[in-house]
Image (tube, rainbow, N blue to C red; front, top):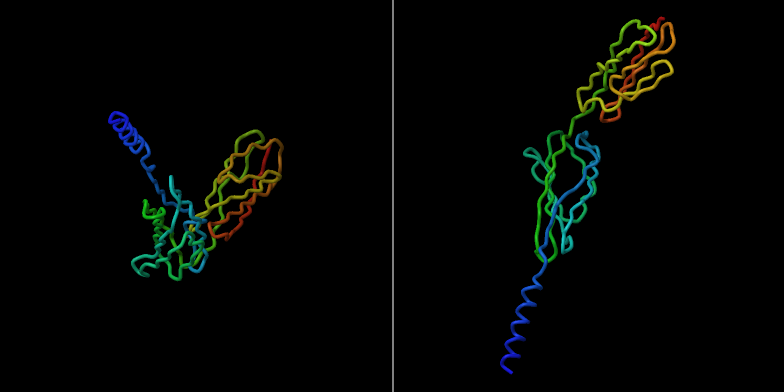
Length: 200
């Protein structure tokens, strides 16, 4: 009887040792729809935190800078925020598993600008080129806030979205129109048109 009891106790201890609670892993993270925005513009935030072997219980959001101080919000989703003053802001998310099983913190920064300027579209190309030779249309556009984000070229009947396309013409053309339209990070755009002669 003692041997049976002893075996039962050993078996119970072995089962207990093998049935330890799984390790809880919390990974805090979120996505932003943009990293550079203007004063008053909405910043959309998506919570992408993950919890392994548990569930996401609640989240603490903090955002601000040295000038404005910190704003704190408790909730699984912050969804969207706006900023009233320009500057570099830090957004921090602390994600917690249920019943204090674990937590993790993640931060990102966004730049808030006073106002957008209009980009200045410009490019360089030779005044003339020959059929069959490569011609570089080099972007020289300028945008002081946020930078140029898209380029749309119309070179005769050819279109391109490269910043500086390299084109080979297969037929002559006099005063062929070349138009470049650039758009910045905030959607402001500008265009410029020049001409080039394509000869045999």
